[in-house]
Length: 254
Ligand SMILES: [Zn+2]
Image (cartoon, rainbow, N blue to C red; front, side):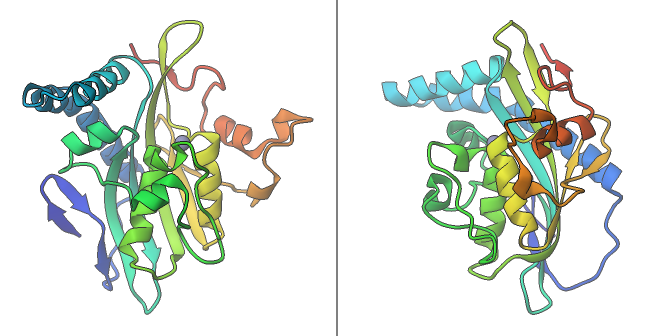
């Protein structure tokens, strides 16, 4: 792995090395997400002081509001994936759903692939997956940015095999009041992770106890969203495997 600023970036590796335990990686990612969320307001405020364009200042204020309540996701991932020729991408990266926060915390957060990947006009992962994010901002979600970034780092080579373990820290406002946190991806990022499994990549999610939850254990990503019986929905099953309440995630944060 190489170090760039505060970021431990994913790097090409041929060496076989014993990875840290998944539990300790989950803990490390929780710490990194917390640090990024804690550092974001100060960085945004500092940028605002040097900025006179109203539209830019308004955007920063929107970001500060989201940080204050719900609406912003920080995520990290431990990546260990093959890209052919015996080479692997291996290491940890972090991302945020908010563009201004990413700009202000560039040392800690990856940009998340190309503009086209984020807009959903460029496919990611591998040819077999044939996956592009839907439009409308989904390609800029934190977990989507991580998958985009890994694709960019592969420089046109297919991702093939290995694993990606995510730790998502999503804060959201409930219509009934209160701000909650969740370690779950949204249904659209879930589909992107399903697409990664089509490249032979095992997906894990860290739950609130820093336990790795193997993603899609039944291999039934394709069967999601059976509206007749939501309990059969694989995304909802994942929710239960993560030990989260469908409405309130893993609890109140504020
Ligand atoms: Zn998402």
